[in-house]
Length: 333
Image (tube, rainbow, N blue to C red):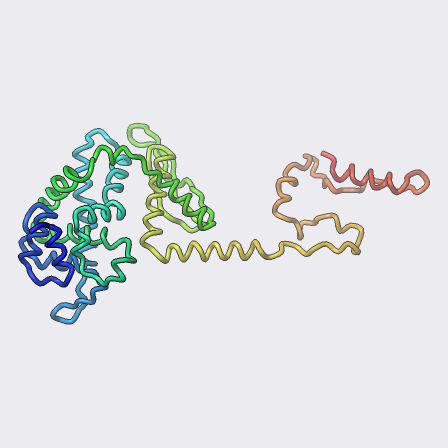
C-alpha cells in the first residue's frame, strides 16, 4: 500500500491505528510510540471533537509546545552549523526556517495536510492550518520521544532531505520592505525611532530601534548596524501583525483619529469684506506650515508683516505706490 492509499483512507476520522502509524512512519522516518499524541496533533478545532470529559479536543496546546521546541531545536542546529556567524544572522536564519509559510509548505510536501481532521470549510479557508499542524506534530514528537527525536527529525527528515540550509540562510528576506509594503497598502504611517546607541565590550557599535505605525509601538530590534536593528524591529512587527488582532485594531484606531483631525478645518475661511488687516496671520490663527517661515525671520525679532515703516501721503503717493510698498515690506527677506 502506498502513502497515497493510506492518506486517502485517513481522510475520515481515525479508524485504524495501524494505518496511521504507517503513514506517520513514512512522514517522520520512524514509528510513533504513543499514537494518541499524534491523533491530537492532527485534530483541528473545527472538527468539533471532544475528549472523554466533554472538553474540546484539538491541537492548539501541542501547537504551542511545538512552536517552542522548533525555536530551540532549529536554533541549536543553526548555531552548530554556522560557527562564525553573529546573533543577527542566526536569528534571521532560524526565523526563515520556522516561519508559518515555510512550515506550511513543508507540511504539504510531506503529505501531512492530508491527515488533518477538520471541517472542509476550514480546510479551504485557513491558510495557517498546515503550518499549525506541523508545529503540533513537533510537539507530539517531543512528548512521545523527547528532544533528541525532534532534533533527528528536523536534521534527517527536513534539513537533509527537504531544505538546503545554506541556501535558506543566505537568501535575503527584507522584513523592512515587507512591512513598508503592508503600511503603504493600508495607508498607514511607518517610522523607525532609535532608542539606544552604544558600544559593546569590544567597542563595536550597537543600535536599538523601535518601529512605530501611526505612533503605535510595534517591534523592537537591536543589531550592529542601523539596518540590522531596523530589520529585526520590522520582523517582530510583522509577527505581531500576524498574531495580535488588538495590535492591528490600535493602529487603525490611531489612523482614524489622525485622519479625523486632518479633515477638520484648521482655521475659518477669510472674510473678504472684513477689516483691511485680515491678511495678517496672528499667533492664535497661525498654521503649522508657517513655522519654517517664522524661523527664518531676521535676528532683530521684527515681524516680516510689520507695516510701521510705510507712510501714507495722498499728495505724493498713488494707490498703486502704496500697494507696491506694502508688498515689498511684507515679502522682504
